[in-house]
Length: 438
Ligand code: PMP
Image (cartoon, rainbow, N blue to C red; front, side):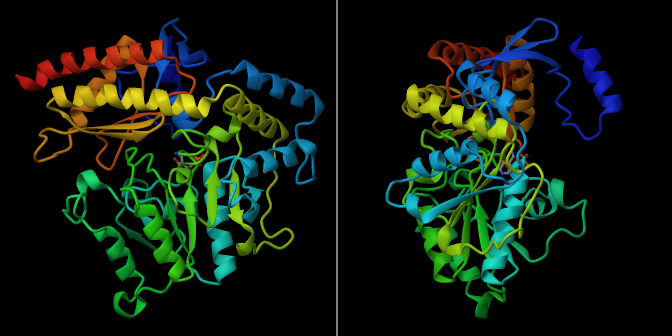
């Protein structure tokens, strides 16, 4: 049945992701961390809707908020509702105490890309400048502004005109340092490079309105930047009066074991974009958390019909309450550390695992042909993904070279399920290795 639906989809629906032939799945239903396909097969979901299903598929606790809200009010444009204002208060309350009074919230529309557009626009209006600096490997979405600051040329280069004056600088990708440095002794060469770029007299660049980066790069391969990197980048940007946008669309909503990823650091951004996990169990929502001192919106400067769906907002409130009641923040840290430790052991025994990294339940495993040359091995990972699929495990593939196993399971995934997933990966690794080691 899955194959029939996939064939039909390819005939009648445009522009869908074409997953490899060795993982044919059409989904029927899902609960918690388990997906059932239309043929009655069960899968462990380590994809998690790409950072959306943080509290698990069909979470009953959140569903109660949704059911109550949908009989009351679904659409209210920008009018105040208790539902919406309660959510804003919850968002602010979850920021670090020392800075929570400095921020306000605006809603961006249903998708992450909407939030990125709003953030870039706000920075441009505030500074009266035009340019944006983004980072290699960064992913920010598919609308024109968001795409312009997304580094993967596969998406961008088919189009000749997106928003102008976007430049890219290297991200802190220590496993493959663009400056060939060792992270223990690099002296933050990437930050020095960034600093040099902003020295307009020498680099020739016009001071931009904003920089935009993911504090933990998602699609780029779940890359955790070097400790101290974000603080330094923010400091340099602020020296030049540049607005700092942290894109937390994927890393946010407790994914990395804190409400927002930047809360693991001392870096303080001017704008934070949010979406994905905020929708609780998959409802569309997005927006900005931004400093009051960069407020530049005047009435109706930035509007949109579907900015504040009341059911999405209720789902977000439900997810916040669920996370607090069951201390999912702590659990995410514990189960995330457990997973990383298991994969580090696997790394030490496996010739093709080059790097294991991540925080909380946002984990990246990078596959290479050779641990010394670090030549990417996307073919191996493609085969591995198929073997895991056959055994009942789903995950996403990403990274600068499409050689990173990206794990973003629901945060509520139990240890039994985590152990089952690890066993599947171990078994699949052995099966795939036999072919490549011959
Ligand atoms: N920013 C980041 C960091 C993302 O991971 C994504 C989606 N993968 C987006 C923005 C875009 O979100 P959407 O697909 O909802 O437009």
